[in-house]
Length: 264
Image (cartoon, rainbow, N blue to C red; front, top):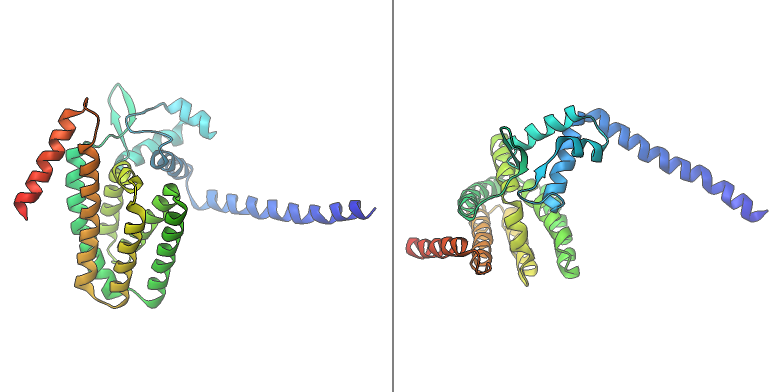
């Protein structure tokens, strides 16, 4: 009898939990259009590598997979094209974008400039609460690095930089930054996965937050610029180590490094 009574007592709690989850799901749908939700899920799948670069996205297959009609999927495709994640080719279909090495190299340079500006602005504008929020993210990155969990690290790393650029208080800057990050995701992920990279990256992020907390705008901007350019250098090294059947990519990487040496 006691066992039966305990089981009976657990059911209302389970029902309550299910009700809370259901309420949260309903709130999510109410606050976002269906195409927006579809676009977010497709973005997550692309960033996670479930939909690899170059993959063709079939409207009907995606609709069936997500349990929606084709209309929201079509609208989501257009939104993802604007954000730089897919390309729409007339009479051919929709494809996950592939970024060439040359494009990635240019984007890194542009991102370094934007991040430097955002770092300066963040150091001028950040409150104590903002700094604490950034430190929480750095702690989460450190924990992920200690576990060797590149997936978790990558996710928090994206959140850290997005939060930091948001602190600059410039909506146009944030929108441009997010598009560039979308285009760089595969390259940046590969660079972060390189052996020994995560602990060093954690140290760089912590130093950046320390400068922001101290209100040292120029120093914060400089560290962010160096941080992004370090990612670019790792991407170049990875490209240079491509298999022998990728000579054009290796040559481009070598030329980029030579150009970098001349500019110093």
